[in-house]
Length: 104
Image (tube, rainbow, N blue to C red):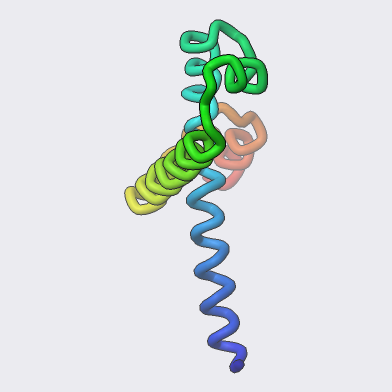
């Protein structure tokens, strides 16, 4: 396999991994709110045997959530929201503020 082909495969893998990671970081509070309101702060390990939820149902739910996280991450990337998020973080960062004053 040529280097260019390996590079394309690796870049594609990294891009999709970043979609999932960003989707997970954005969906974290959705997960926590769901645990609080739906389960009343009871962990899934205790609720699954009581409700009789099958392994397939849990697997299907996890797969669906992974696909949802991927789409959220892809939306974040396609609409260049990384740049907006970075600029918001830079406006609160004292070091960046001082460096911008020095450059001007």
